[in-house]
Image (tube, rainbow, N blue to C red; front, side, top):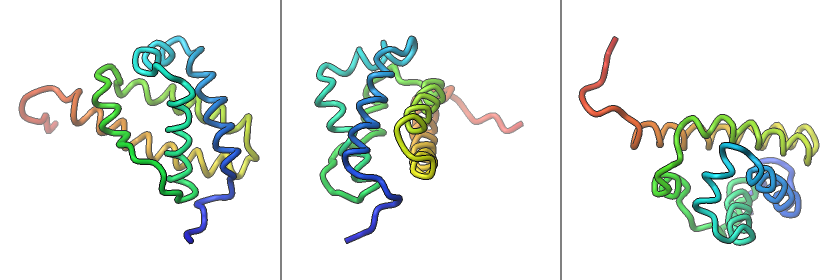
Length: 133
């Protein structure tokens, strides 16, 4: 069995996900984006909790593709990732011990950077040759 990346329980992951998505639904920019795509919040939160349990605890019960989901949405843009991460960091700070919140935040920022770059590279790139100045 692989040890977790950092000490967090499945219940703490569920709590972070619930608190975070309650904040997302109230967010003036992110709320409407999510509302266009999430029709069943409990199901979405359960899926995202499985994602984090896989990423942190190495549970093998998540079978999604986050990059594909963000690309398929069509209205997720690179500028959405900064407020998403800021809200996620705030949730982590409010719900977890500092050391765990910092470790999870670092992981979330690495994942978020990859998703943001994917959105920029695969969808928002201006057609034509690269500008090399």
